[in-house]
Image 1: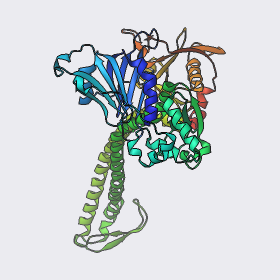
Image 2: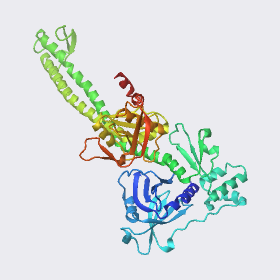
Image 3: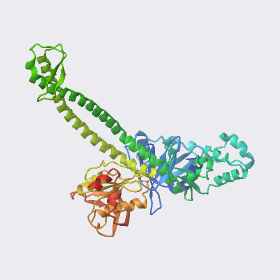
Image 4: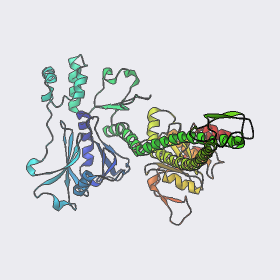
Length: 543
């Protein structure tokens, strides 16, 4: 987030934040801290989340109207923030342009008010580079909004050469000014930024991006084609008047989706390591199986010697003997150890074969144990990755061939937009599908009668769901409900966190505290086969 974009965001957001109550501080994803605020004097949309993703490259600060999942247990820094700021009101907001910092004065009383140093006020500092922090400042140390100096037309060339003295000439702005040949264009751009009331420019690409490239770009001014990479024609420019809406949409693509994928990969990493270890153990078992098979192969030779031992003296010794065809195989040459007699070699062969058979019995039990552990491990790993599957599919605009790694009483589908859909086969399957869902996932059910529960998996609470996916998920819910023979069916949609199981009721019986959406969908039986994962389609057709 460039400093000019940060300033535009602050000018739009601070009037809403002043006077808001700070209720919760959470860390839904590593590196993302969310401050839940209740806005004053608003009948609707009273609760918002101020989200900070602090890092050296591409930091972001944005307001989210969607409630993000709480995520992992907070660490010590977040707990300290909670101690001094929860239950307080934001009484003043001071943005610092050059430092990309937002200072929030926390007024009112809290349980930790007595722990604050005497004669100081509590400030919550949101630093886009270093993250959130607490500051206890005396009246003489209160932060002040910086006064921006803008170069005059005759100073612009010298200001670009000595940019350290001009904070308004940020690195992103300098790269743009270098590409303007006309001095009037450069001065017009500076004047638009100084006034700060123009549109924001959102750039996005619909096709798959190479690894490491951002999914979109947001700028406070139109970007020249040279700054859009080697193929600027593939970027689509969108002008946005609403600053808060544009920043939130960009942050979903630049912050929430990548962090969700990283969190899903991190959750699956220990399971992946254990999976590789189990696969190596199975490879060693296969090598051991080959060795034991060679040991068991000594049994026919021992029986052949037993059948023909009368042909040689009791103390006969040789490197090999020729045995004729008989009940234990064709004629062949049997190798012997010259250190032992023929009868002693025969006893040793019988002993080797018995050891091989005993080893094979233990190997079968060990292989069964490892294969069962590996299957359970892959199920858990795929379940951990489900949090990032939808985001990957939408970003790459492809259908994912997913393995059926869910319980047998839960059906797995993939919408044409790449979202994972889970549907219970029966009452216990409905309960199992909800257990696989995150609080921000979407739950579906046919209105007015019995039916299966359907879950739409989301990477995070801010991820939008296309209308086509909502329609297809609703069709799956209708196909396994009391409305399956109708032409149209009304489907209820709700977030999973608003679904409650009824105590003492049958499995799958729930109460819906809040409806997210209600819409009519077309009942299409072909969805049952069309939305199956690609690896499951041949088996379903054969059945």
